[in-house]
Length: 227
Picture 1 (cartoon, one colour):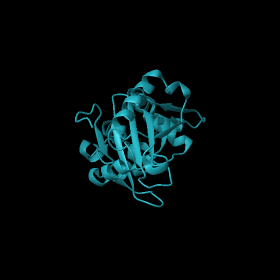
Picture 2 (cartoon, rainbow, N blue to C red):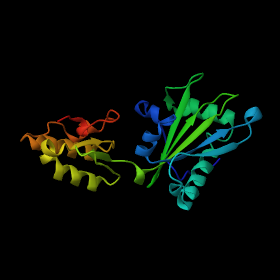
Picture 3 (cartoon, rainbow, N blue to C red):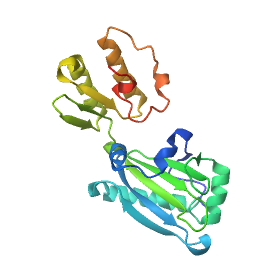
Picture 4 (cartoon, one colour):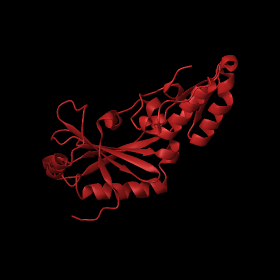
């Protein structure tokens, strides 16, 4: 096996566990899901049968993505996805335990590149699919969404555009029915949103940036605050 690996593999943190399992179509859209590779080690745990399942617009399944996915899978094949015994050994020594497995302990591992994020869930038992590699395009992830009393709703994948809209529309929320949801886990974006809400009332946000490093609750509205 190679000693040098191009992609850094990190064990899943407990708060990420839910992301390694199937999501609703709405959540897949928020996360910029492209699809997932379902992997079966076959009879005896020594084979390798991958199957691709799309979960997003076909345009996201670009040649650039496919080339990188091949590299990521190739690297995993040298270790955790080499075969079933290798998976069991890797999971025992690399942590990454996640909740949610029905019949056995599941494990999660993450690879994050400049544009894409890969979440590998391992289910090291015979008689079932042994792995699911979910793939996400970070440029397509929803930063937030806004809506108005008129029923108009706008979704944003660009943090700068989202923050600009919140800044411009927030002072008029009582007359326009403006409401927003911050969906990103980016601490800087979440803090900036809360700063705006506090400033609206002439107050200073008591929370520091490090307070936002923890994972937000799913669907947290108003940057963690409610008007």
